[in-house]
Length: 196
Image (cartoon, rainbow, N blue to C red; front, side, top):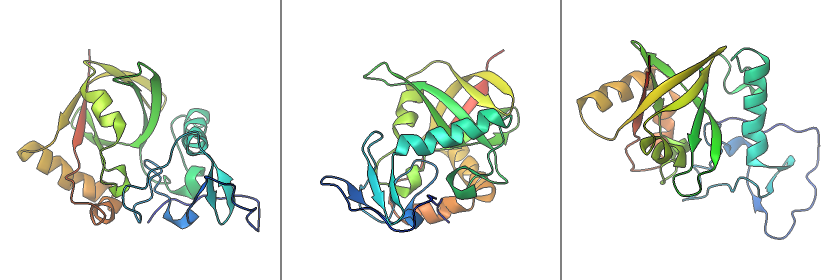
């Protein structure tokens, strides 16, 4: 199941030159990628056209972030309710090349005292940029519920621990199996270990 873009318009306005046309039912909530198209990723500050109208990917993430912060870490309405009944964390990371600070809403599973993320990118052939950014950072911060936690990220691309966490994550978020149908890429698992 993919997240849904909702809007108050009934008929879509004409598509401007240069805007991509997508079906709102194809939007993947984790990274706002379109898995039905080969390497069809959205550009954060470029208008995207759907049958419901126009939106910006940053607006989708901003909606999740705003609801998360307004409701003590609970997200039930943003992205058409796609995150209802699951755990979302806000991952702070810095661009490896740009030095720009980002906040990325990502699904989060606990594993003992650590937290685990899946670098699925909605099944896109490219790894999400936040994974590489975290890989380059010795420490970062996440927001989880009402807490802000300093963590040390560790990216697992293969091996027994990665395989175990991947299997557990598919139980936590079964949509991960659907994402895997859209790519040959093995999703990295990111372990976030709290720093004392």
